[in-house]
Length: 186
Image 1 (cartoon, rainbow, N blue to C red):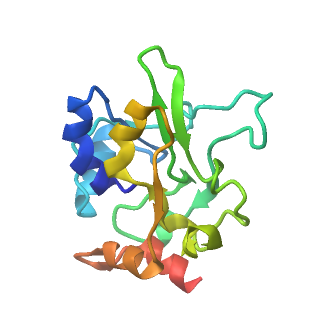
Image 2: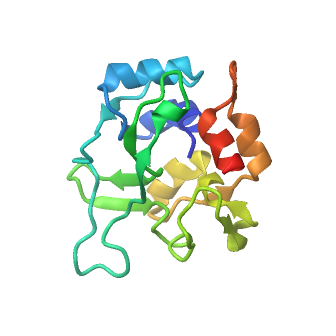
Image 3: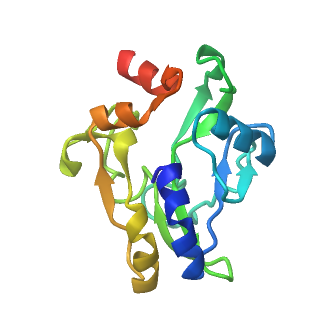
């Protein structure tokens, strides 16, 4: 689920009783993250939370099958290599957590949940044959299905994007977003 897509769905989600929050492992606080996103042509009006210590990450119970963590991290996202407003931080790959008003988890999606839990290695450019051969970084929940999936009590639909589409979406006023360029050239 890309931020732009989620932002576009936010009004409908709010009308449906869903409060959407964006949590980033980037440093600097909510205002600084919003400024960085705006500088990258991705302004966001959703509530933003800066969580560089990963205190807001939901953990699975120890008795749950497979992974203890729902999240995949990249130990050192070298923002210095990209210039601009990129920061050094421990990156958490995208995840979706839906909780009810009591805090009970209703739905989860990440690189460690089915259908992606079997993918190895957990790298952005790893091909996922059972999702059209798209690369791992391009597989996301379908934003337009989120509200309906919550109402129906089922997992949100997942779709993959080809690497060429991801690259096209990554084009900014300065050229390719450095993270995608680096992923394609490494």
